Amino acid sequence: FGPFPTLLHRTPYDKSAARLSEVSVANPVPKSNLAVAADLARGGYVVLNQDCRGRYASEGSFQKYLGEGEDGFDTLDWARSQSWCSGVFGTFGLSYSAHVQTALAVLHPEGLEAMFLDSGGFWNAYQGGVRRGGTFEMKQVTWAFKHARLSDAAKDPQVAAALDAEDISAWILAQDWHRGASPMRHVPDYEDYLFDQWERGRFDEFWQKPELYAAAHYPALARCPVFLMTGWFDPYAETMFEHYKGIRAAGGQAEIVMGPWLHGRRSQTFAGEADFGPRSRLDDSIALNYDTLRHGWFDRWLKRDDATALPPSVRWFCLGGGSLRKTADGRIAMGGTWRNDTHWPASKVQIIPYHLASGGLLSKIPQPAGQAVLVSDPKRPVPTLGGAITSGEPVMAGGIFNQVTQPSTFAAKAPFGPLTSDPNTLSFTTEPLTEAVEIAGLVAAELTLRADVPDMDIAIKLVDVAPPNSDYPEGFSANLTDGILRLRYRDSWEAPKLMTKGETVTIRVEAAPIAALFAAGHRIRLDIAGSNFPKFDVNPQTGEEVPNAKGHSVATAQFALADCRLLLPVMAP
Image (cartoon, rainbow, N blue to C red; front, top):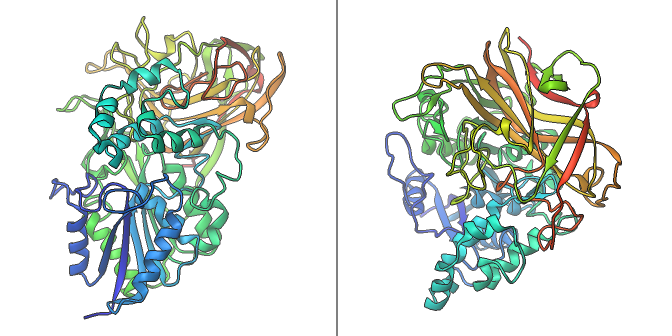
C-alpha cells in the first residue's frame, strides 16, 4: 500500500460537514469534505482532513488565525513518518482553509510541492480580510457571533440561550462597541480574539506574524507552485493578486483565475443584483468543473504529469457589455468576457487620471479650481450597498447592487433613494461616454482636503452608471469596487497622527482591483463619503480609537478639487 503523495486540508468548519463551495453546475448538491477526499483518493492521493485546534473533533483552544502554521507543520511531520506517505505534499482549501496554507508554507515544510489557494491565505490581514485602510472589517463581528453560537461553549444550554437572546444587528447599529458588553461576551474566547484584533489599529508586531503577513515571506511561498483563485466580490481579490505578484517576483510559479464571483460561488452566474451570463461560471469556461481543475493542478506538480515550466497564467472576467435588461430571476444582465495575460498588472494597462470638478463633474480634462464640502455624521453613516463581502449576514451582502437605499437597507434612514442624494455623500460623474472604457487593476483616488476634526474616514466607490431602459426607467448604478482610509494613518500605518484643525492633507485612497467595461453611453462615477457601513466600522471623528469610543463629532471636510483625481487602470485598445 503506497507510498502516495499526500494532500492536507485543514478547516475550522467541521471536517465531516458539507461545504457549500463544493458544487458544480452538473452536481449542485454540496459535497462533504469526506466526499472530496474520496474523489481525490481515487486519483491516487492520500488525503488528510483535519479540524483546526479547538474546533469540532480537535482539542485545545481556538485562537482565530493564530498557531495554524505550526499545527499544519506538525501534521506534515507526522504524516511523513507513515508508510503510506511518499513525503510529497500538497495543500488545498477555501477561505480559512487557504489562510492555514500560507501560514504553513512560510515555515518551509519539507516536501510541500503544490498549493491550491482558493479565496484566502493572508497577503496582509491588516490591509485585507481583517482590517482595511486603518478601519476594521465588520464581517469579523458577524463571523464571530455566528461561530460563537456553533462553538463547544454553546453546548451549555445557558450559554446557547444567552446567545439566542442577543440581537447582533441592533448591537452593530448602535455603535456601542465595547469589550465585555458585546453579544460575544457569553463566549469569552471569541470576544477576546475579536477585540484583540479590533483594538489593534496600528500595524504592529501582531499584524506582522507570519500567519497574517505572507507579504514578508514570498521566497518561502515561491518554493512550490501555487494556484490562486477567487472572485471580484470576494474580500480576498486583492490578496490573490498580491500573492501572484509576490510569488512571481520571488521566482516562483503561480497561476491565477479571477471570476465575477462571491466567496466560493464559482458555479453561479450572479452576484447580488447582477447576472453575468452562463460563461461567467468556472464550469466549462476555465475547466470542466472545480474538481477537475484542482485534481489537474496536483497531478501536474505532484505526479509530474506534464509539469513543464509554463508561462504565468492570468485569467480574469471583465464585467459589462450585457443587454442591461432584467433576467427571468429579476437581475440586471450585466454580461462580461474572459480575458487573459501573462502579467499582472495587465500588459495593456495605462493609469489615466480623471479630474474632480465643481458641480459634480468627473473629466479627463483638468478643470478650473473649485471646492466641494463633505459632511460626515457618525450617527448617520452611509449604508453599504454591496461590494466584496462574505460572512456579512444578517447586516450586509456582497455583489453588485443598484446604489439606491430602501427601507430594508441596513443603517439607511429616510428619505430613501439614490446614494447621490445622501447628504453625507459627494458624487462626481462623467458625461455619457462617447466610446467604451475598459479597466483592469487597482483603482485609487488622490485627494487634497482639510477637515474640522482630528480624525475621519474617507471612503470611495467606483460606480458604473447605466442609462435608463424600459426595465430600469431610472437607469442602474452598479457598484464596482470600493476602498477606505482612516486619516490618522495617512502617512504611516505604524505611527498614526491626528490632524490639527484646518490642516490641509493630501491622501491616497485605494480600492480593491476590478475589471469592467464602461460601455458607450454609460457614465463613470466616483462617490466619496465619510463611511461605508456596516462593511467598515464607523469613525467617531473625535480622535478616539474604535472600538471603545465614548462620543462622536460631526465632521466637515473641504476638498480642493484642483488637486483631486481618480486614477483608473485603463486598457489600451
